[in-house]
Length: 222
Image (cartoon, rainbow, N blue to C red; front, side, top):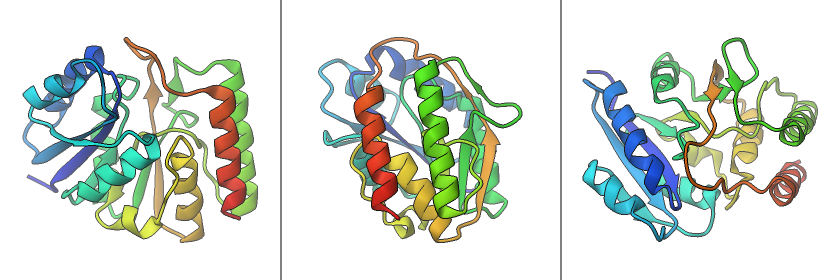
């Protein structure tokens, strides 16, 4: 049977994506004990109704992605806790690697688009450069060796997310996790991840404004 798994997914108007995502997760997780926690930002489409039909637990937070993850992971009961996006950019089949990493003894397992076997179908040049700048800055300042920075497909051993003490309410959350994990010398494993293009709907990331938020997050944590 293995560990109980909690999968936390922030949503905002993902009605066209959430059904196929949850169905794919169900197939991958067949035979495992798991829960899905949807943290919805008050969607005005049928996201919540579809998620509920698939058996997901629904909680609400409309502050931002970071705030939603903090709230969702606080509610998670599993020994392995996974954060993933709702837009079908994260491959459900990679859940097995994220779970295996925690069960092997790591504190945090992070998907990376920039190690062998990883990649991205959805990274314009400006975002690629920005990610490299943030990655290099964090690795130099905090003596870490990450290969990816602003990517949200991750798993945590139970209790670890709380120990990190993260507080970023928006898209700075992934960077804050990386920094605090490095400072606390947590056991971190990177696994290859292939980022897909969102299937439907509008992306929430705003390259310039959210890039500024990430930069502020880095220097706030020095």
